[in-house]
Length: 92
Image 1: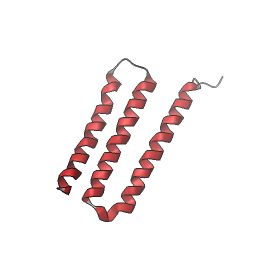
Image 2: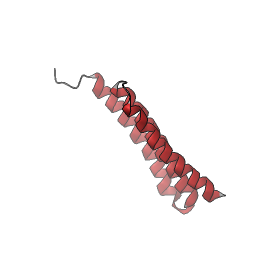
Image 3: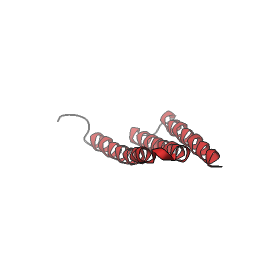
Image 4: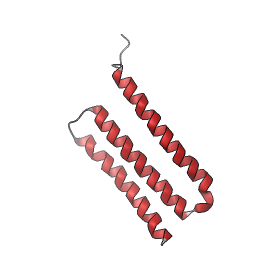
């Protein structure tokens, strides 16, 4: 039963990864595309790590560190990208 949930979470993570690439093909702004890609990538990666946590629970400290790192890194990267894009990208 745990194996099925674990594999289900990993498949869900891969689905989130591919789902995030669909808005890249649209005609919206670059920030919208980056936001949707980073959110789906974060959720997909976290689902995969939780699936691994269920599969190999003896590695919980390392996998918990990976979850925390994913949450912090992707959030900070999104804010940095938004700040850089609001500055115009030039040295006026």
